[in-house]
Image (tube, rainbow, N blue to C red):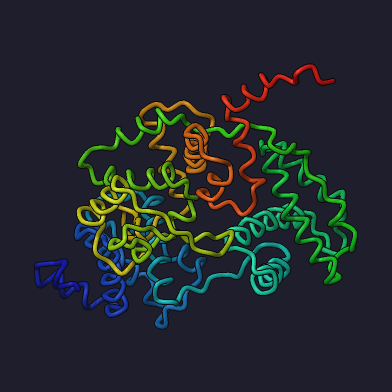
Length: 414
């Protein structure tokens, strides 16, 4: 690998004669396979040269983060080599970052365990959600995050978990509101914590009645209209990406999947190459909530946009997910990344709407279907709703239908 990156024999020899040459070579090959540019690989190789020199006192490379930070303190040798003063703070931070990535790849980084207070309770709860309840990965991740927030908040009190009471839960939820969490967010946290404390009560970790006493803020059913861009704004958004730029060629089919098919962010993030049936013009969507698969027709506009991205932009790699990042290391776009992508895309043409995430485009899809005269049952099936109650809110945006109801003549009936 060194021979591919460097041309001068003296430079190649210098890199080969520093300790851990094979380990560095394996990591550089891994980075190359992840799509890093040659210039970036050159920089990584130079950084690893100094990391290896600094860590030669650990022949087995079993190193802790603290030992890495200690090794990053003295840069007099590198200053003599480079012939100028270094920004020691920046150089040390970069050294730590590169060393951690390298050692983590090798499996040699000795990282401390989870520092979350009462982490064993969190792990037990996760296993229960996965193995016994069979909850979706999204729900498990979300509830685990809520619980971790509470455990860190409560752990600061230095009290045993058995001493937790409803006043602690109330104080925690109140603190979330003080930090700017919305009523819906606080209510979601209360739901996740209620599930945990119900389980914790059966295990004897706390009082059995705490769960039922956890109350979030009152949320009125269907109290708000769905918020999203108008269909005219969706068309304008898609038109703004009709270019030959690689970013547009990738992002345009993503926006189409949100706006035309009403898919969720997780469903787009996990879409795989084999989910697109080009022979029969179909898309197979895995529904995480229902744990089933739903078949959609592959519309020509969406199919052509996806095909152009696959042929002209998407790199050849081992990933089976359809949509990948542009920056190395190459990897599937995460659910969070899709939120950032959609928000940025909606801001560029100046689309004014309270929410700019994928769900806003899902709402736009549903409202458009209402305007086209589809029934709530048809809209619910298109969106993959498990219950008709989830679709009911879109009846509130059917203004023409509401006007007909308001104009209904009772014919003198009392």
